[in-house]
Length: 219
Image (cartoon, rainbow, N blue to C red; front, top):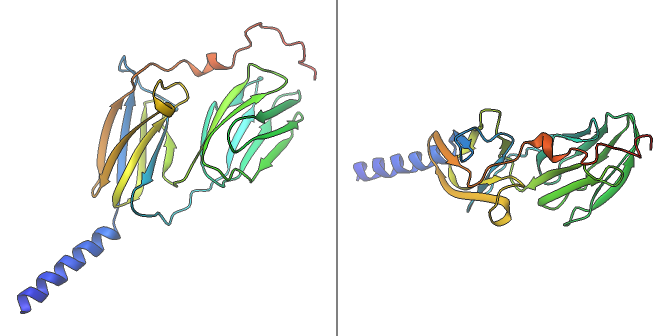
């Protein structure tokens, strides 16, 4: 009987230890030619369990040299997003698609904060004055998110043990919903390497004025 009780105690302690454990997970992302895939969103969605963490750090999206900086942002749904106009002209920022529609003008040197991004999903953004400007904000339902660095690497720390859906997202991915996904079971530290199915354009080319002429530059 004592051996049975001891075994049960060890099993319970083992499960308890696993439930309270957290791990690190690293992803390496490359383009089809083997070069690093930088500035790609990666996030972990819990499957069958909930995360207590909250990652609602303020996201800053600037307007600089008549372009959005950064081109891609990611935040947990409900987070504050600050728009900062670093140009010497007015911008009219808007999003006309999805459940997070908005529109506002922002003068030179001013900031505009939004606290009502309450729906997860992609928020494509533009400027009504400078129509070549464009950027994306992805709102996710998890605190475990990041973007790959210049080497195509992203690392998550303090990931609670459990099942997850690893999601890779970029607006230029030629896949369903512009994303790739893979199931993960996190029960120890891990690494994963993935290759994108198609090449990504240089972000600097995405917001260039095609006419090299701005008749509303003093707006």
